Length: 296
Image 1 (cartoon, rainbow, N blue to C red):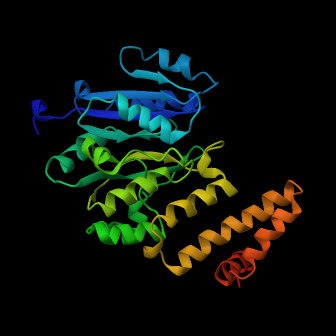
Image 2: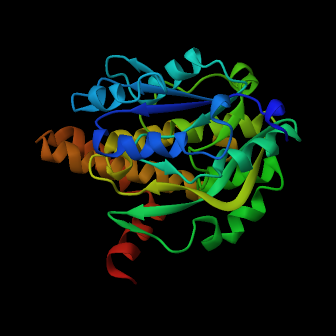
Image 3: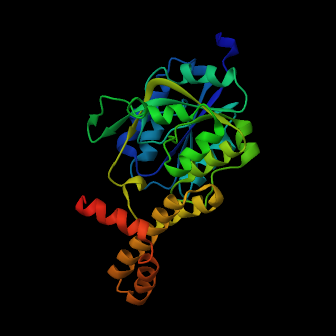
């Protein structure tokens, strides 16, 4: 692919209270080996109250900075999509970062195949430590499911292994819709399920080209909350007839379990008792919970 054949990639970066990580994130996009004049960076500040505006100001002229009241990551990504001018859309969160060849390796995958999304393998970072082995190298069974959209669809219903860091043609959003602003968790999973159901396949670049910060303090993915569990069930309910009984039992079980815990902490004992009554007959969940606690 020559320089003149390189399509413009709009990199959409939602951010909320991520000022300490933002420079590394933005520098990782600006440092791509892909032609910089074919990269559009859109930073969407979802109502941060930290130093995010000051950090963004240092990149004036190199990024497009949008600011909105706090409405959640879906609304932030959708705002970035609306402002984007590129043919290809790539997603990156402000607390994560890319390695230099990511765009160079992903763009050709989309150029030579229709109905395709693209991603790369990635490393997981916890605290200051980046795991030595990449995500997909430890999970070859997931890589194998990507050969067929129907198989990928069924697999991620049971265990979502697709990262949010996907690249896709703009037409995908026009066909299947935006991120669901009603979801605070699992919004990317919901979108990928819609794409797969529409016949899109996922191309995986085997080379690790990104770093995902796992269990970062304050991140929504670190929070095992009732609201998070409810969103998971909301997504699964949209695909109910394709979800296994075990997956549904575990997902609904954690909703009731967390409801009992949170409502009990609020001294809303009657409401907690209702959820406890719904949890008790869920033998699949109860058995798995006891096994996790006791190892038996």
